[in-house]
Image (cartoon, rainbow, N blue to C red; front, side, top):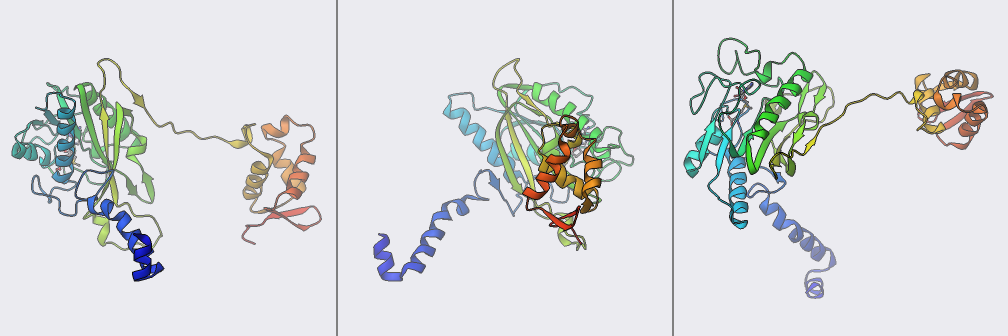
Amino acid sequence: MNSYLINKFGKEKTSQFLREEGVKPLTNRVGKSLTSFIAFPQRGNEGSSKWKGNLSPKVTEALLKFIIDYKKYYNENSDVKVIDAMAGSGSLKLLCNRLDISCSSYDLNPNYQHGIGGWNAVVDELPESADIIHVHPPYYNAITYSGNVWGHHPHPDDLSRCNSYDEFIHKLNVANQKLYLSLRKGGRLIVTVGDVRKNGKFYSIQNDMAKLGKLESFIVKAQYNCSSDNKTYKKPFIPIVTEYVMVFMKEKPFIVHFSCTKHAVVDIRKSSNVTWYQLIKDTFEYLGGSASLNSLNEVLANTKKAKNNSHFKDRIRATISENNDFVRVRRGFYKLIYAAN
Ligand SMILES: C[S@@+](CC[C@H](N)C(=O)[O-])C[C@H]1O[C@@H](n2cnc3c(N)ncnc32)[C@H](O)[C@@H]1O
């Protein structure tokens, strides 16, 4: 087959054709069926595109279909009960109405139209269990809800009104734990979250939140119609154009799989698990890019590694001469090869 194509079209055209055909099945699927990257430029009908931070019902429809197919495959009861815990404009509830799937939806908004309003995921209990619990929380304070999208005053437990990012993550974890524990055996908690950049700082909610249950899938979803799309920025940065849909499964009663991200700061001067090269490079950077051997010795003398080595000055001199990153400027004075001047 390949030799026939090469004879007819030449080598270059043939390899281009085979390359493109090779990825076609994937590019044809993206945005049209459930894969680990989903992109639905047309959001679908249920809920409201005017509701700030609404979720395309095409995403939840694809997930519902997958879960129902999965249950059928394993001969489980495929009559699923769904809960949407932060329902917003009610996209999921309205989708379930169309698909004839039982769904209860809740939101802190006291005037929520399609289910139970005034329900606070941080303090209130869920009065029922479900096979699928979906939560699409605010993306920290990217969009504020109480006193802005709905109501006249900020609500103290509105997740978009937290005083700090840590408070937001804590409250989200409290809510997610409650939702997970309301799952029925074999059920899924679906968490849709996005990352946020505010005043130049990057907040990765998906990275920082606690994760309960067995992670069945981590879906990257393209974000459309972001308010930042039409702004121009002077400072270079990487725009956020994706959000994440995480599917967690409750496999067994009582037993909860759990993981969380630990944030820590380490001063490598106090560590022995570091090389002389790494320490010297950082010492140069600390001293502005260039330094005398005496200054390097003085700073490095206070490190744990130096305190454990009575010949540390010899080690420093040897490391400087052995490594290409360090350049001799004059007798007893060196600089980093990448120092500004
Ligand atoms: C990103 S929106 C959800 C959008 C929804 N998926 C849709 O398609 O329209 C987040 C929702 O979380 C709600 N919310 C914020 N804090 C809450 C809390 N403590 N309890 C329940 N809902 C809360 C907000 O009122 C808002 O409607």
